[in-house]
Image 1: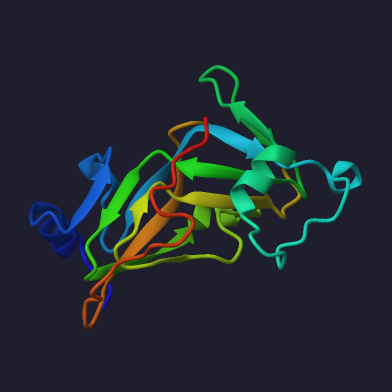
Image 2: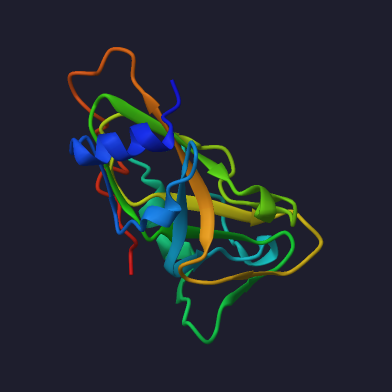
Length: 182
């Protein structure tokens, strides 16, 4: 069941959901707007990418691998990042999330940005029950326009869901307590 504005506020009040920082205006009818943090991981162009990445290799950890290959860039207030067509960047939400094991969510793009060609997350929308940390967004410009990315802009929305039978343990994968690497 998708949570309404009233239910989202009730989960926050009951301390089963924490979203920090959060302005009440970010809570919509059935979602919460998430904003872009102050830095991006810019991935190299395909021509410059170099060797092949092997995700099936034993012990592979995606974030250290990508941070080593990409370029961490701040997004200063006076110098937003211009995302070019066919460019991939990783960005983080400004909001740090904590879910009880009775809550899960999906990260969805914002339709206003999608209509420009911006995919705010490529394929990984699920936020598993019990998750803690910021969310890493795989942002790709598949449109014809250059898109200005600014720190603090609404970049995605979080659609919260009640887990029918809460899990005994929450998420404990490699992205638990994920924070922006800068």
